[in-house]
Amino acid sequence: ETGVTQSPTHLIKTRGQQVTLRCSSQSGHNTVSWYQQALGQGPQFIFQYYREEENGRGNFPPRFSGLQFPNYSSELNVNALELDDSALYLCASSNDRRNTEAFFGQGTRLTVV
Amino acid sequence: DAKTTQPTSMDCAEGRAANLPCNHSTISGNEYVYWYRQIHSQGPQYIIHGLKNNETNEMASLIITEDRKSSTLILPHATLRDTAVYYCIVRVEYNNAGNMLTFGGGTRLMVKP
Image (cartoon, rainbow over all chains, first blue to last red; front, side, top):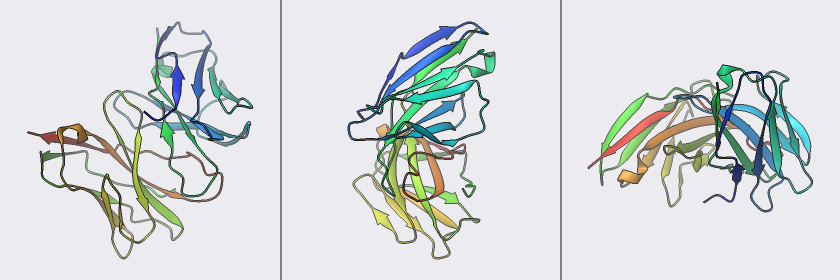
């Protein structure tokens, strides 16, 4: 149990739709990041938020966007869903110190049909 | 971040030590070596990290070669619950680095009775 919770756990969407995934970070953590994990592959970094601002982004198109709220919880939004967006979406939280470990949630399994 | 190379899979007998190698021949002087693992259907879990000295915690030991071009994660007494994919990651540490981790394919460790 990491203290990082994600919702929903599973989701099915149709191609072209929009989806919002949610993450509550561990208490005291002000940094949250999102990852996409396709079946059989390692997680791929999407972006990171620190104190409500994006401070890092991976190689994902602009239709992947996010928000971080004053309580440091976060949302991942994906517009115009494509079949290849089907994956496990992971959220991780940490504090802003050096050499810090990331605490991951259990993920949201998104299926696009 | 420097690229890492790990064997795709390994087996280990229950109760024996599991030694998981990682090659990071292009590592820079300011990059740390991190290990995470991912048990099936869960988010990744932090194990250990180090810069150049060997490290040990309650989960594992990390042995880094003197030239820092490779490292070995040691699980001293593997149990069936250690069956997972193990990821070796190298990254620069700085304040607000947070969770920007570059995962490779990892090593799938199977612990057998």
